[in-house]
Length: 174
Image 1 (cartoon, rainbow, N blue to C red):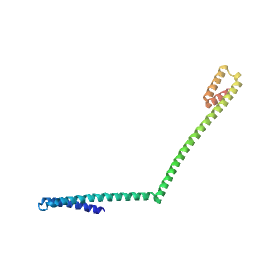
Image 2 (cartoon, one colour):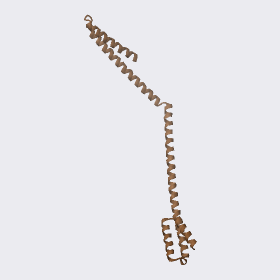
Image 3 (cartoon, rainbow, N blue to C red):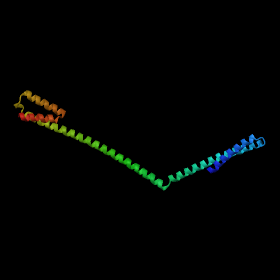
């Protein structure tokens, strides 16, 4: 079809050249308008044929694409891509859920450690209070007040190391 259109285009050019040649000759000048009209019609027919062949080619490509889109192979391929996408999404969700779980478990562990430290610091401070009460008569009142103040400060700060050091000091003095 494209060859025919190209042939018509070349024929139109030849007809136009012939019309120009006839217009230069006075004897054949009366044929010039007929050759111009024939050349115009040939040119119009070639472009119309090219346009129709372009439409047919485009339509056939669209139909092939539609057929290919709905073919079994393409449907299976799209399904495979969908499943792969879902797997990647689930993998990402699993990764983020695992991170979130680790974060919350670590936060809970930290809360439990802080609560345990507070509990032990209170019990250690009470033990120090008992030790101080036991040796109250054996130490000077200033030393007793200093140790008692240190015990209260370390208890408020939940400073277990300070409480242990204070208890060691009280025990060694005892």
